[in-house]
Image 1 (cartoon, rainbow, N blue to C red):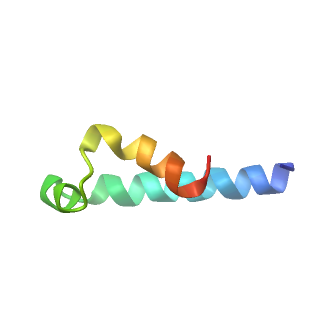
Image 2: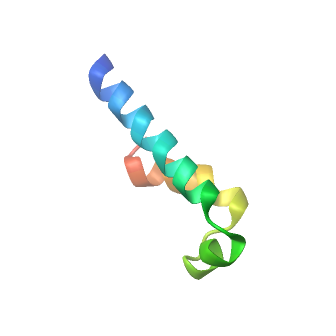
Image 3: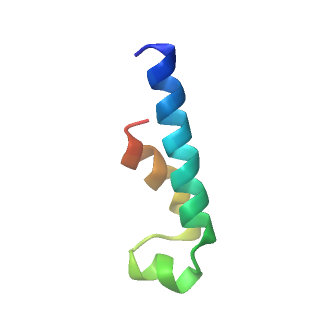
Length: 48
């Protein structure tokens, strides 16, 4: 993975973390995600 790909992956990861972080606990629960799981879910989603 080159540097441009790493930066793109990191940006997608941060965007995903931020979007999930803005959700309410109820919305996260509806998706089956706990607030403590946000980073793990984001890493999995972007292939990090």
